Amino acid sequence: MRLLSDDPITQLAFSVYENKKVFALLLGSGLSRAAEIPTGWEITLDLIRRVALAQGIEEQTDWAQWYRGAVGEEPNYSTLLEELALSPEERRSVLHGYIEPTETDREEGRKLPTRAHLAIADLVRAGFIRVIITTNFDRLMENALRERGVEPTIVASTDALIGAAPIIHSACYILKLHGDYKDARILNTDVELGAYPPEYDRLLDRILDEHGLIVAGWSGEWDHALRAAILRAPNRRYPTYWAARGALGEGANELVTHRGARITPISDADGFFSGLNQTVETIAQTHRQNPLGVELLVSSAKRFLAKPELRIQLDVLFAEQTERLIARLDATAFDPNGKWHQDEFRRRVASYEAATEPLAKMAGALGRWATGGDLPLMLDIIRTLYADAEKIGGGNTVWLGLRSYPAVLIFTAYGLGLVRSDRWKVFGELSAAPIANEHRKTHPVIETFFLWDWKGWSQNELWQQLEGLHNHKTAFSDRLSGVYAEWAKSFAGITPDFDLLFDRFEALCSLSHLRSATEAELDKHLSGAESNDVRMPVGRTIWASGRRSQLIEEMRSAPMREAIIDAGLAPSANYIRLFARNLERVARRLDR
Image (cartoon, rainbow, N blue to C red; front, side, top):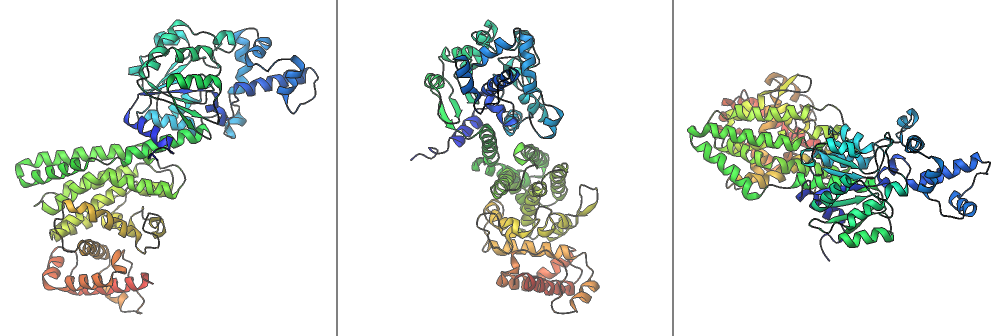
């Protein structure tokens, strides 16, 4: 069994991702069906019904069967439309009511861009798709593109073709083969659809020769001129994927055979394109940089750190990686809209981590080996990432909270590097540094990015949704520990006990957070009932009693105690003692 034998969407998504702008879309009326814009067959039956009722015929349960009995022929869209409307202008008027949304339609969400249209627009905006061929008269595709901020080049007549920007210079190039429903020159009948103008044929020949093809919502049975164009295109340098609901007809199978197409079974266009877009975004966002490339960046940072004269190169390196990270974070894969789902939560967490890894490892190296002047640079980066995360105010609260996860990862990496090298004073300055939120109110860094105070934490149950963290009492802390157990190898060096290093970092963060309470306030509060404790975010030490005891003993020892006081993390030895008592009480309360 092959890896992708039962997963054609992933196979197609990899093709789209690895071959940007190579695939053209061929969209038929089935794409607009979810918008309740009827297909040609449905329009045919409705026209039969309306004409028959006007002639006094009673309502029928099967108008196609009635028509066969009354006329002696199969219902035919082209024949019926020619009979009802003699001129192109009349035919346009007949179709207008089936396509143009009324106020009621708009209120009830009909005849508006569907999930499929919006997913395609996302693929266009992300640079994966540029050319769209469609037999549809409606403007749903154009409207979806504009809703996503893309202004398409639209060719719906030979006149428009003459003045249109070349394909290569278009953000999106839409060829509306049958015209636009607001233009009387639309092509409806068999005669009109029998052949395209030479200009269209030349353009189609070029597109079909130079692009792969994704076909959706088109039967392949009619549209004789389009069928002819596909059949005369001999070059199949790129693949064709045909999204099919059920079995294809004889005409479509002929095209599939000629083009060597891969048939992709689908349930509907919405699910197909939404799934394709999501999978492409997942591939893009979880596409981890080559490990050698990441380590090269870290090595460059270390080399620049070693020589003061290379400080400019160091700043430029961090600036470039920060800009690159923000560009990835602003992609549609992190759109804050949409309902929460466990799989989507897991995908986003993994995607944020994959995108942030290079800069986080560099930040850890800076914390570990810098000898001064590095804190302003790191604060600029953390504040920039946080400001970018906070610039969007509307959407799903979970997705909005996660937007600042990269800033949390950078803060954690830099903090771990500082703790690893005993740079307590810089750690204290980092924790106390002010940072402005979306309301322009400032809070210390430690009260913005550490555990419970970070808006993306939300609740422990949320992070328990990640694989392997079910029922973990400190799921978010455990996630960070797991991530940095791997990442820290590039900057922490040989450590006899990484878990102890990580818990030391979190314990110092807890101590820094507690500094909002004075020694007198803390002493008064802890002198009360045994169950009392002062609010203080804590991580994995609540259940790791052995490491907690080791950390408390370490912090009370003279060398570290004096270093902590000198760094401003605690005002006195008594404050450290009160912190230890509070830590034990918080642990007992939470570890029940």
